[in-house]
Amino acid sequence: MTAAASPAKTVVDFSEVPGLVGRNLGYSEYRVVTQGQVDTFADATDDHQWIHVDPERAKDGPFGAPIAHGFLTLSLLIPMWTELFDVTGAGTKVNYGLDKVRFTSPVKVGSRIRMTVTIADVQEVKGNGLHVVADATIEIEGEERPAVVARFLSRLYP
Image 1 (cartoon, rainbow, N blue to C red):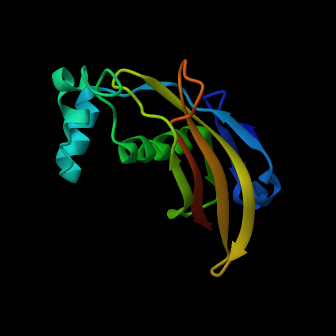
Image 2 (image 1 turned 120 degrees about the horizontal axis):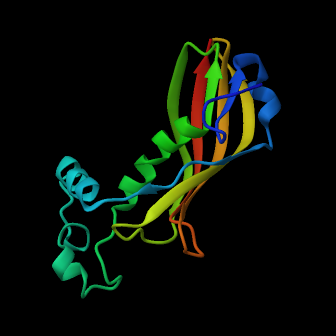
């Protein structure tokens, strides 16, 4: 294994991926969830619920501030995943899906989030590929409960 530029990033050769089962890949950098991101996501998904896009009204809502869409927070799994992990010798990398997702705590606009991941399983699949199962937790800085807990599935092919 070789270290990448970011001290948190794990970079391995395709042949080394099965040996990562049980390994925690550390933490991504923190990133701030902005109102601009929330508004752009609302436009992209046509979900303009006031709890997300109306900061004035949201101040009086159940969370005291606007919150990110759960699926926006989940979508940030991908850039944080690539910040934590890379595989050399993989010509194709595919997001395969999710087995389980829970939105366990709202992310207030302006919050900082980061992700930690443990490789739960790696199986060979047709086409000389690898099916990678990763347990991901997206945390909110200063909060006891995480924002998202998900089992993320990806496929790697040489």
